[in-house]
Image 1 (tube, rainbow, N blue to C red):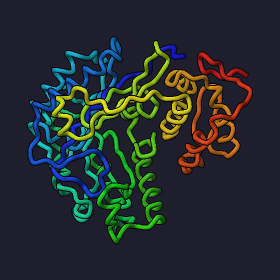
Image 2 (image 1 turned 60 degrees about the vertical axis):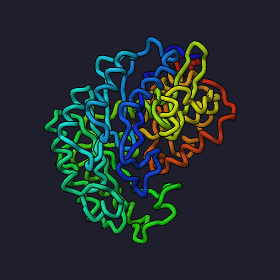
Image 3 (image 1 turned 30 degrees about the vertical axis):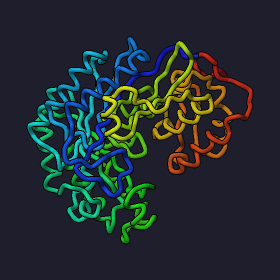
Image 4 (image 1 turned 45 degrees about the vertical axis):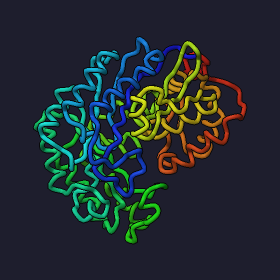
Length: 401
């Protein structure tokens, strides 16, 4: 049973891009024009579908993703937030993140976003090499990338994330570390650093670049870049996330710790705990922007699923084990409503393999477990029905000796 609801975030999906990147598998759609006013109205109508499920709960964080949210004008974002504030309770120290691409970066819009309440900007740089940007099919160049960061600072953003990739076509070890070095020199508070992967249903998957670096080179790039980040005080706290002290992404931390989030917009997913009913649901919205707009955001929920106990156990661990330094043991009960006893067989199996450590207060992957995270996560999918003698308190999730 749930003793209280988990923290609650809000995800807002703005699905349009200037151009679809060949590696992107997100729900994004190229558009010559964007129906801003109609879409903002649809988003607010969409939110009203979930309001009865979250009455009285504060929104701790908001993330506006895409697509390319910075294609929207400041006036549209301000109108959106006026509507959101009329419908929701914002926590006093709410984190509000908005994604932006350098190709659509605009100084006036950045000032408008900041005035509307956005206090964290995530800029999709990907690379500072014009050759690499061209190979990735990006619409911006390195000069525009630097300009985007500069105007974000000038607009008053003191919490900025930069997205950066490695393992790019024809990218050498030196080029990968040089890319990252340029990002570090700018002094962002957070860096998301991840390897380019050829995801299904993307152009790169069907027509892979011929000059992709091999696994050994990608491993060398990752190790060298992680050492560089550590040298400059960027602490790795998740598989691909690095931050200065106390600058972790609050919205993403809530997601990785299996907190709740309402998802609105075309194709958005959400997870909501209904504590009084002792269940957790997932809701998915209509994926196609045209259909979403035709319904004006109403009646757009295409599926609603109640998570089973097995789902809850596996999904919690799938996310929480991505945190390099682990999580408090009590969070399992707090955010799933389940006794930590039910997780004990899997924990012991993972510990026997040297992949996990756990004690009265904390559960965390070992160094080996973090390097072989997929193998560790699978253990919690395959061994959920094993029985062992319980030693966790079923209410508080605290280990008893």
